[in-house]
Each structure stands twice: as structure tokens, then as C-alpha cells.
View 1 (cartoon, rainbow, N blue to C red):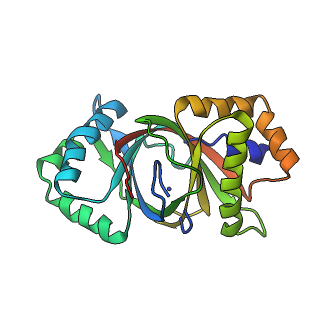
View 2: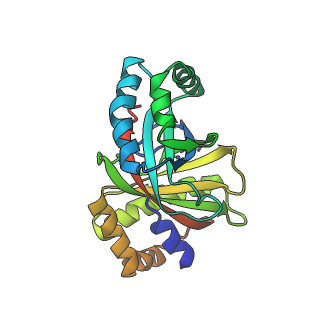
Length: 245
């Protein structure tokens, strides 16, 4: 029951996996963990990313979707960052094109560096498991950080997550979506991350369904359970540059 509640209550990028709003095919997710400088807020960074950075992406015809994850409740050992800058790329070629352009961006990079201090990126492969991504500029985003249970494989994850998403939506009349990350580079100790997200009003339907036990009862009747043991993190995701392919 605890594992079930964890997988459902995870709102907040894998082989058969996608992103935050996010791509319909597999993509490369890059995550930078950052801490604020001075009086900087998540709103300041998101506003800059939605204006100056977004214009720079368009001007250079770069293929990238960018989101700011504002940390709300994060488990150790990843609980020190204030925000995470998350990029989605259709391919590794796109990642290196953006990287090269950023190194030549001059004042744009200086503006960003004046707001935050960020570590080196970590990577994953991602894919969407649920329906269309929400159009909301800001939304709850919960991550189930998981290790596979004995005898389970990623194929079990790929089967479970879309089935769970559909059952949750049907049970509480919500419209949330899901995606999964795996094949990590630069991070160890986990097998996959399953994400659930949607507009705030849709997410609260699900959260209340968890609180009231309605979803747990429906899962029990359906005879399905998560293939992994997970801890759950909650972020607020700010869309800056929407992923489009």
C-alpha cells in the first residue's frame, strides 16, 4: 500500500521514456542542480528563461526545451539544490550544438551566472508514458525515484506507468500525464524515475484521491502494483522554452 501511494502521489525525464511537457519520442534530459545567489528567486530565473534565454534559443534555431524545477520537498542526497534547470534534447547532436552556442553567448551566460551557482549536468533518456502534456506555464511535478523490485525489469515499468496513469485519471476524473527516465549518466543508486504531472487543478484531484483512499482502493481491485520501491520528490515546474518534438 505504501509503495502504491508513493507512485500515485508523485507529481512533479529513459529508453521507452520523455519529458516534462514533453517529447513524444525518446529524448535526452540534462539536469543542472543550482543554488541561488543573493536575493534571486525561482520566479526571477523562470522569467529570464522565458524571455532573454527563449529569444536566444529562437535566434540560434536551437532544438531544446527548457524548464525550471523549483524544489519543494526533496529527499537526500539531492535535497541541497534550490532549483534544477532541466533541458530536453531530441538527440546528443542537439545537446552539443546548444553547448557550443552557449559557450559563445557572452553576456547571456554572465546574466545567468549572476543569479545561480550550478553543478555539472546529469543525464537520462526519457519518454512520455501518459497523454498530452499540460500547457500550463507552472505545474506540480512529482518524481518517484525508484529501484526495481526483485524479479522486475524496465519492461514492467513501461507496462505499469501508462496503465496506472489511465486508471488514476479514470478514477478521479483528472487529466494528468506521466513520463519516465532511465539510462542515467552521472548518477547512481536508482533504476528509473517515474513522473506524474498536470495542471494544478488536475493534480489536486489526484492528490485528494490519494488522501481519501479512492485511488488505492481502485488499484487494489485492479490487482496492479508498482514494479519498484520508490521515494517521492515534489517540485514546481516552470516552463521557459516548450519542447516541441
